[in-house]
Image (cartoon, rainbow, N blue to C red):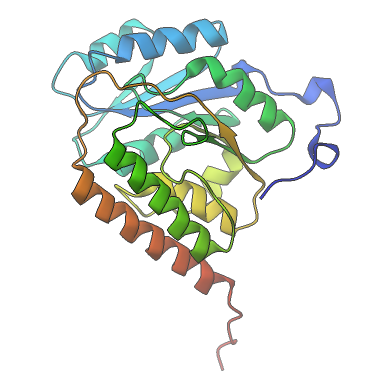
Length: 248
């Protein structure tokens, strides 16, 4: 899952990525309470150099606020988390893509750490909300996320700690090389498929804050869908690893 620093250090300072190489992307849906702060935090941390892309299906002022902050807004009909985020990660052409949520739960001040780890050679850097306890997360959700990680670890044969985090950094070739299929469970798929295809993945501890605004996901229904996705994607990747007989 990880590699040593000696193996992963980029060879030249001139080759190191900067925030001018980064797109921060998110799906947005009626997040006018938080979106302005999230975008301001990204601007401050990256000195305005990172590109911001929002795929939006809102009926409130979310897209207007995003545009006021210089974000590129791609409007689409609401079709769920995965549809929006998949469109967001594939829209920009910068070499590094960072996903986040727009509810102010994720620490944009840790973006430099994510970029540094990409520069160390990792293909995916995945924020681990549970490392510090995630006390701001509802207890039911916290229990569910520990359970998702346990199930995914067994199915993959690789220990993971947080399968459904929304904050990750990817090299563009990773997101472009895989066909993403899930909707509610896309966050888990975005970790499982790269891991099972032997990309260098690093889980990195992050702080997790109480969300601004109301959650749009039903915890029970959404949790069952995420669990289904974890099983489905893990088994698909296992089958993909099996040798195939050539057709006669």
